[in-house]
Amino acid sequence: MIRIAICAFAATLLANGASAQPATDEAAAMHDFFGAALEISVPWQTAGGTSVITRYYAADHTFHETNEEGEAHGSWTIEDGKICATRVNPPRGQAARYCNIGLGKKLGEQWQDSDPVTGNPVFFQLMPKA
Image 1 (tube, rainbow, N blue to C red):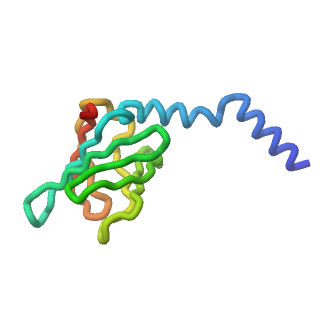
Image 2: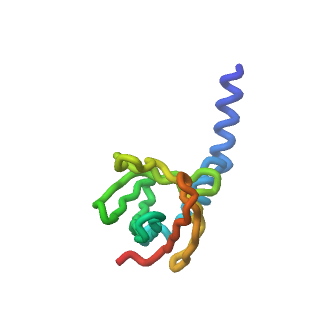
Image 3: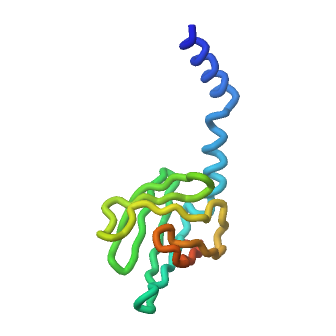
């Protein structure tokens, strides 16, 4: 009897579109990221230079990026209002997963966040894909 009630409740949610709402909000919030380039600038605190990563998000929850060390790829999710990117096979000493603000940003916007590991500033710019 409990199983029937749970199934009926789930069917009601699906019929009312409750499961589609988060995907719609997610698609709207990430709209400008798809087909654009997210430039991520990470100043080196010791050497005085800057690492620049260019990341390309896809609607299928994957991304690929390029930087001075080569290319990387992975998947992304949205958690607690942040975009979380998880790299496949990250370089030694680097975190595989980072969550940063940026959700809902529009093409041409720039913003700053903090590196979740070091607390150092990280700069973001959402640009048209070259």
